[in-house]
Image 1 (cartoon, rainbow, N blue to C red):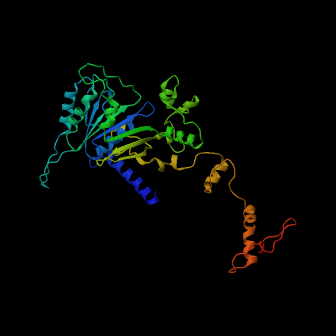
Image 2: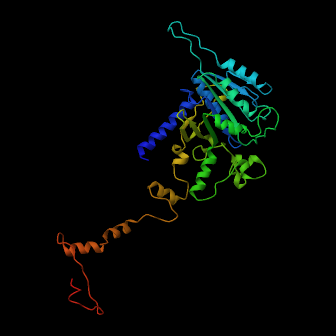
Image 3: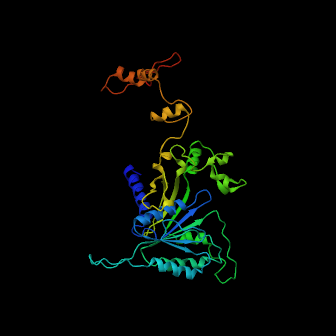
Length: 371
């Protein structure tokens, strides 16, 4: 791909992700965030709420597991013990509210932008039947100005739907498969420190480290410690590694356009300070950049002093020296190759000649061996 086309593709992906975060042009009515034990989706949901506040959108937070109301939420709904039909009706009553018309400008009332955040969809199948999900989402997202962001924990095992319970057939897909099919945007979050460690292992042809449940060790919280795979370390995000690797979140986006084409890209959300506890929407802004543009991925891997000097000179890094000294460079330039001598002796413009020196064993034939 040409450099200009590659740069356009990267800029276009970044623009789509910004539109998704800013709730612009109905980029994604249903956004699914997949988090895990190593990296929570709280950072990304807070960024959605902060940008929604700047857009003057109404934020409705639906809680199945959250106890305390978030500072940026306008409406907090405790949905743990409510029937789904009652819950859908309550959510719809908060989001479908027309704006007051401005009599001076003479404009008609318009629908206010609304952001619905569901903290978790890891519910038992009898509480949230997979067959009811399309009906639930369609009753909530009843307007183009409504965007729904739902979180699903991938580390929580999904329970199978018992057969013959009246909620559908036993061959129905599970909740995660159905959510992945219905979502117009899927965001998978992971820790920046983990991504940097995996990159360094790949560059050295080493096995990529594992964290959390995939680590296969007693205690799932081992993977939450920097260097936990080696048996110890400090907590992630306690201090920056080479400029704050632990302060960012890697977001893997899969945005499904209306044309049917999917846009996949990886981004990094990084922040030096957070102000969500104060409820300040303007503060705590997070920087969004492509993962390849982040300093932890754009710079060369750490090595010895000789490798760092070679990288500064723009040379390829290796375990041996690929450069030449000044004396070796002068000696190489002074070498005269054989075909240069032939060109000088023969002269230019006279055509080619065959130069052959006969040996003692050669039999000279005047008819066949004429030169």
